Image (tube, rainbow, N blue to C red):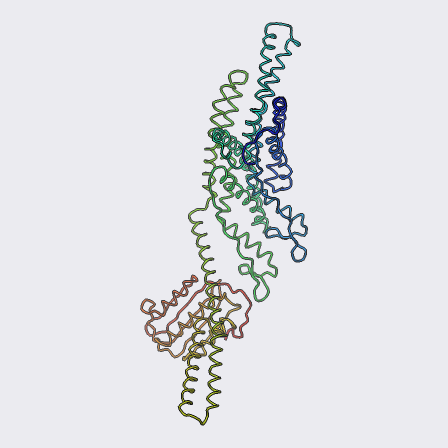
Length: 629
């Protein structure tokens, strides 16, 4: 059922006779729900999924009673139950990025994550606060009327017979009848209000649903204000914990403590972003820097952090995480926001309620209650706007700045470019492999077949022998052209032996004398290696064509997170990148990887090309010529 339904029992006396008692029971359950608010809010904040699911029994009971007593069907928009984790290799159970030895622990983590992300949990918390204020008085109205009427009827039994007692007795009869008569309508109104608070949307097909929009939003705003104030207090405590962890981590050397303290704070700010998106319509993206890659093992088996080497990756990982957090501006903006947010919440959210409390206390015993009604209505009306103001304040510190947006965009573009370059390099290797294993092999077979035919025709028709010889020579020329094309697409020696041997092969095949000095303790990424190879090849070709040099020296080394390539010739000099296409081509090739080209070529020589390619050597050396020649 998706809309309102009629009462399950159609008997008029049964329906009207039980309505006051049912209303009183619903009001009592509202009081119980108010007592369950704090445990449920604490359980949701701490990720205690089992406790939240246990406390959900009260909203589920109210949904069933709304259908049975009020004639209003309220769906339960909860996420489906999580499935039990399956064992992995070694008997471990995975949840997120962590492995657990017990399936119960993994199931608890999975359940806590689902409950924290379920918006129905937030609606239940708002309902627990708003139900005693908005829904309980409506349900309790028939019982109050019946009780007042019965008190009037029995007034003569407790006091002396007098005209006021007789008037109370006469007035009690219509009050009792009105209580029983209005009971079903009051329960139905209570069910509609409860559905407005617990369901994710309005009543479908009900034109009168807009009448309750303002009370529903007002109740949600009040509940949201109280919940956000409690979360602001929790954030203040987490900020103090971060300050203590900062002192323990940096001066005292307890490296991982700061990261452990920052992580709950970021989780809380993430919860704030979700709540403000839900209640204030403010979308505040997270400006945090991405997590760095884990430290890679060097060729000697150690893990590097700066200039220090460690035999275990744990300390470098902790140091990298601390450096990332200390260097991330969002960490300090979050800390400042956590420290100041409770005071802002106190002014924006608790200010109207404090005004109402002061007015009531000032006029207690007199006209104070009447005087407090207009400020109370004003406070309820102001609450949604206060939530928007709180969202604007939060966006001031939690939203990414223009600089951080540009930095994140640069990181995204860098990652996208690296991925595209990797895909392109893989595609070139595939083309090279297909040409090497397919067309080149067939040309070799054709050449061998023509050679066999030429031997069979030895001494026979001279014209036929000449045609076969010409075909064999053409196949050999096509094979040579294909091999040159393969080397231009992706040299096989580069894929098989690495950059060091590929540069050495270039030097051996060059018409001039080339000295090569290589100091590469590992291999760069394949796209970077291909860029460096073709840049060196272009530089050697330019030197042979235009410099008039006799000797060329090539130096490759890796230092400060970059691959440095120096090509020096003893030619006439005068090279200018703005005049020739060769040097500009090298610049464009290097710019793809944020590389730089520096040209020093005074008239009379020598000419020195210095190329810088940012890269990380990811594996141990495997080349036979990767050392220094």
